[in-house]
Image (cartoon, rainbow, N blue to C red; front, side, top):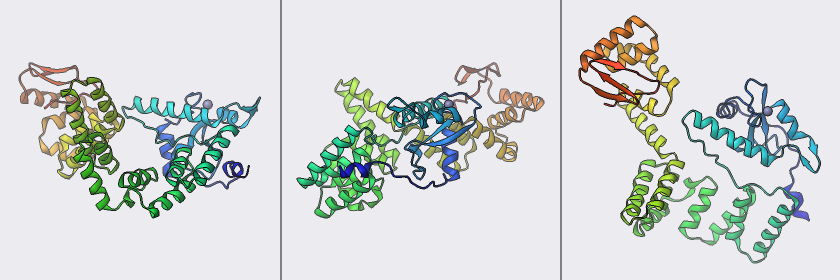
Length: 354
Ligand SMILES: [Zn+2]
């Protein structure tokens, strides 16, 4: 079995994890071991596939020393904690941490590489069959599925040289993470075709892949409207769910934040930060623009600023100014109203609905 040797991991040299990547890994894990999840234990970053040169985000997991030890010792036929289990613990933990911060973590995961001897044998046999039949498109898909990037790229280049349709080319380039290599005339032709066939979800997904989330939302909403109009509520809900999964809401808010920065609209920037649950960023933002806010005479911004500065006297003053500006009862946030010029209960994260 010559191919089996290719699949097994050779001893590779350790490559230092770049600081920026290490920060990101620690941040998303809340500096906590993803297996036992006990706070304040000494931790380290573990290479899930045991290859210390493979520093990709999906290959890294934060473990305490005890849990790391379990990945090294064998009990019975297998390790006490194998790569598959670590990946599951890690993905679940990152999801929990991100939910806590009001973010949506999506593991940008590849399909699992074959692990057991039987899986490796099946993968090898399948590849041999395709190669014999010169089914290179299937072969490329096969290597995408089992996560062999080198052979994936080799067969993708081969099938592209032989000529393939737009959709397959785009799917392959996407799998490589290189949609930028698709010529713009092909992109435009593909978009035109999807529009012609009213394939709104595919069109939305494609715009998302191209980083144009505004258009992604637009066309996915077309699809939802069609489904609701034809009474297909369940399918409409699934498309909606897909939009949530793609984090299109967050993406639009970030786009709006950029726009508000360009226009130097402080109030809008603050609101968007609060909508994104970025409370610590919101505080930093208020402090950074302290002087600008103080000289702007904007009663709302001034009020928020005083809550951050912690100066009780100025806070009362700012409240009075708010009361003077708004006399009637208004709903100004979640569980927050202004009655007779007094603010009742401003909770963390609430904002003024203006
Ligand atoms: Zn642990």
